[in-house]
Length: 193
Image 1 (cartoon, rainbow, N blue to C red):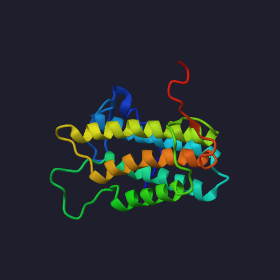
Image 2 (image 1 turned 180 degrees about the vertical axis):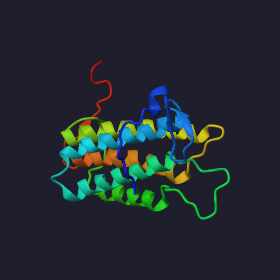
Image 3 (image 1 turned 135 degrees about the vertical axis):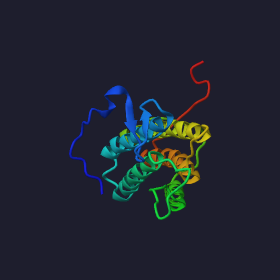
Image 4 (image 1 turned 30 degrees about the vertical axis):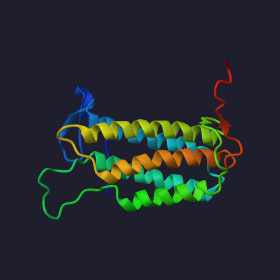
């Protein structure tokens, strides 16, 4: 259980923060950037949810994802130790969370008309907000992949799969929020030449 009695600690006044392991890192550290961008993704989804309350099942999907994003942030804030202590485990993104996202993508997508062009971000307020969340999610994915490739750092395979699948979900969710794709704004190549 998390207990937050004090919000400010002054510990970050010199540009450092602590990971969940207690290790100090600069606030500009790639790992901190990774879980910070996950937080931005979560906030973007929270904003989108202001427009999705009318569809309880759809909104519940987004609520589950927001919770999973906290799991992902905890996963990223707790790097795997080189020599883990027996009996100690950290919160990690699991393959079951990735599979649930895939199932939800498929459930939403089967209700949409096939695409005939790329989709421009926009349409309804919910769709526009979900497109913003999708682009923030893609940025988070780029940072997480860079972190995974960095010498001395590790990121779980399921964490990378989850963030990749999430951007797919957010694309399909944006289309779903656009009256099941009927109000999608389609790209017309060369339209303004």
